[in-house]
Length: 495
Image (cartoon, rainbow, N blue to C red; front, side):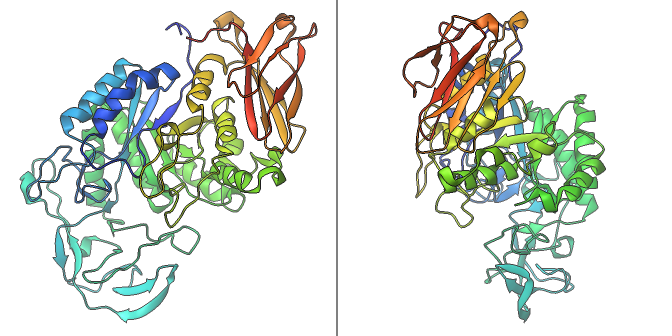
């Protein structure tokens, strides 16, 4: 595509939960950058790049300022590779027209250095005393006060105060989920009265530490050349801190458009829309939200198959109510959809995923985020295959998803729409048909009289044959059962 033609933006989450802990992931990203750029990826969300205690998770964060392979105590490096390889990946991505967002794991000092007995019975889990609670409902205590030392000391002497003077001990932390010799909790879910505590050693309202995190935000952008952040579940984070973080980093980077997106995990926006609206308004700055509610609709649609009414797919979603801030997705590594076999599994049916991706990639509302595991497959104990022909759908967004949207949303099992294109800007259009039923779908749609007599084909190749656009610009567009077809003009640009 010519550089003077505007391209639709598409993000990829450039990792999955079981990405290997072999220090090679930054190299893998470099290897696939030409392909990602070619199909239409314009941004990538990287995993948290800082030093962790373990080799496999990458998220038991130990030293936010250590992006490399060594530490003062441990020889284990970051799960994904060295700082040099990270910076190379970000720079090469930029040369390919792909910007980078950093995963910001802040407010949780996820891995402390040593056990420490509290000077006061301040807070562990319940915010009253160190007591053990029911892992399925943290409002229910299941023990009395527990006299134990806890992992609650963060000092990092090895960095010699180079980046930060901040040190934490027990009384700086609001909650813990793991005590020495005791498993405080391992199954945190939003639907079981878990809102007060997320995971690990929560710094809570420790305002000096919050400003240290803001300093880290300014540092990581300058150090890496990234242009945005992904935040973990923001309902666990004070909105004033989030606002201060974003505003400070944008000001220091001299980039008012520096991107910020967070997860606001809810099963139903209808009972919490006011909370979300209030949170976003309180930030006083632009902030995007992952549309977890659309994900749950996709899951339900996949589980119910033809019993699901496709006309309800947008109901109570963020993209329906606040499309300018919605980052749409099908699945991701963890907080939206724990991968197959994990405790909080919320995995969209593989049979429905092509339909779901067509819905987020080929319509104008929302900023779509493609999951690495769906494009490249996932590993682990329950490996999953890539979504068939997802690369073709991403490329279709790059080449054909432009212009006015015309919806044909009149059947519970077969829906369609047309993107009319922008001929004066050299941007092509397309016609899309989705069917979740057990028989072939068909949708009569208007693509414009200017296309009369043209032959169109299914870009996916799942529906064979061609159709001819009638004199009035209408045609009967077909789709196989439980499938999606993307119809484009035969001979339309495919570069």
